[in-house]
Image (cartoon, rainbow, N blue to C red; front, side, top):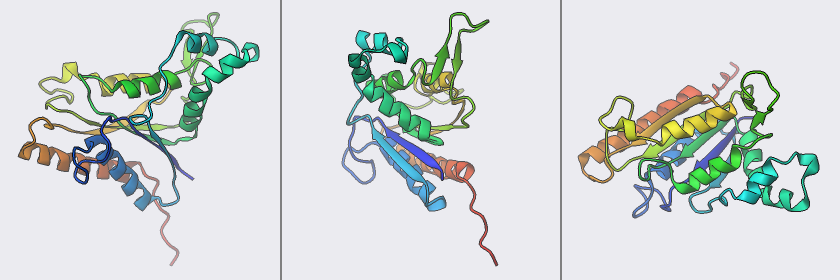
Length: 229
């Protein structure tokens, strides 16, 4: 059975098109999940709303606990890592991660950065050994075959590769870097632009992004076996 991890990180509650001031990324991520379930109804869905319930930011105590070998951890260390453990366990279960990540000041929301900081963790999603020849760091999820879908939204336009302001888009590049560090290298995406303009260009961008989402589902979802004659 396929497992899909659905993450929302927008500070806006609700979805555009159905809720006043709703989120474009919540709209896209829910569309992805809905279309996926139409194709693969037996899919297990894990939902994590870091926009409304952000993970605790990494602290000095968290770092000390994470870099202490598990057998040597004191009780308080297990407590400080408990939330991180839950988030990582969800990630490990997932075959596909679909993340709604809007652009806030050229990067992902702080809530999503806190999520990344909790799941990119030594000994669980990446390895580290000072004595290892060559690179002392290596990804621990490289053999899992996981796929990442990043669904974004931007107020301006031209942030895609080759666009007029692509160089200041630090959403998809930073998210792909973090997940790639863990060994999740296959990534896909769609984005809505022109939100600050609110004109026909926004409507067209929404339509294109929704079509892109539908296409991604058809591309990534497991194909059903034809019914027996």
